[in-house]
Amino acid sequence: MEKAAKVFFSAPRFAVAGASSDPRKFGHRIFAWYLAHGITPTPLNPGNSSITVQNSDFATKPSPSGLDKPAETSLSVITPPPVTLKLLKEAKEVGIKAVWLQPGTFDDEVMSFAKQAFPGAVVGGDGGGGSEGWCVLVDGEWAMKEAGRKEGRL
Image (cartoon, rainbow, N blue to C red; front, side):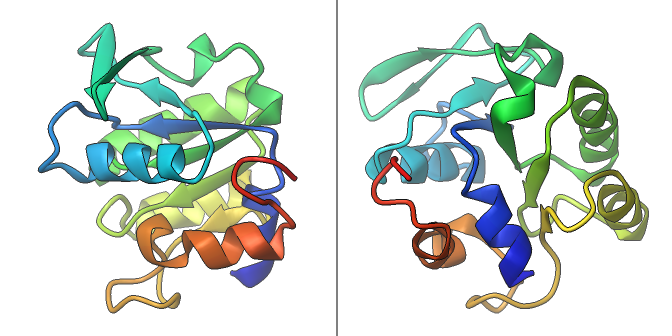
């Protein structure tokens, strides 16, 4: 998993699937985490044309196929497992190379598909520094450092 986390943060672009304006939701907290670390990810949210985080508005894309350069983008996922599976299938089709599956976003079927679709580039499951598995809020700073990324730059 450590290698996958390094691969994840080696990408020049990032997207957050499940990004939200609601500060009570993890999609908001994770998007804000990226901003706090000098990375402006593309929010993916099919239900809203924009989200507001830290008093700024960010235009959303409905899905991975709407990303400008998906082959250069790592994807953080904060969606329920059935949505995650559909999202990962589309992400694979458009060329995304690495994904970070936050706790609660996957089941056995999703994880199996992810490991097959993104070999060596899936962060998720047991481990990491938190009690619920790999989470960018807990393990992201370490992973950024491992990838040689300093506040948004490699």
